[in-house]
Length: 251
Image (tube, rainbow, N blue to C red; front, side, top):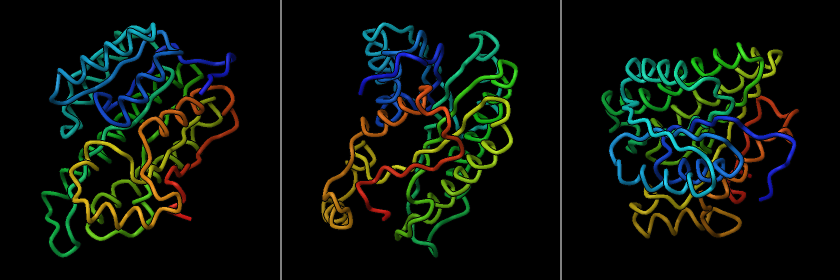
């Protein structure tokens, strides 16, 4: 995808940027950004590999090891980063986890763990990044939601509820901050070829493929291409939108 010449981020932050969708977004953004920061939780090796790819695109790579299951700690880290790095004008709020279980078997512990990352830490990222953007009167944020926020699927009630909350945040923040030249949108991916999907039994994957009109799973680059568009001035009048990228599964 070619990037419009009339708008590019100075510094981009991608949470959960060491693999899958986050890594694809970080590498794509590196081709048009001066600096790209990514967060990772465990695998320094994976994060370093993404950092190398970022540098190959000509951008400075910044690695932030963070545990987003602890929203307060993440908030303190993010404050320190924003203070040291200067303005961050583009954020991909991507970090997320899933604990799939049928409704009557899901536990409070699973609910709390998923919400700590997908809701509480995502809210921390939104509020702190947006607060700095208000000072600059400019900024763009993309939340990575999911079609699970509005599509029923057995075993995904906890995950779906967390992504529905992120969708609500997207619309509320966009409504309140649009007048300050801050655009906030969300992408709702369907089934994307990542490590999470690789762990799914083939029989289950075949069942999902039959529900997708295009009869295939998406790739992380499909999400990254839309992120690139939303980062550009070509999407200047897009605000508060929830964009499905699911091969037509939610139609």
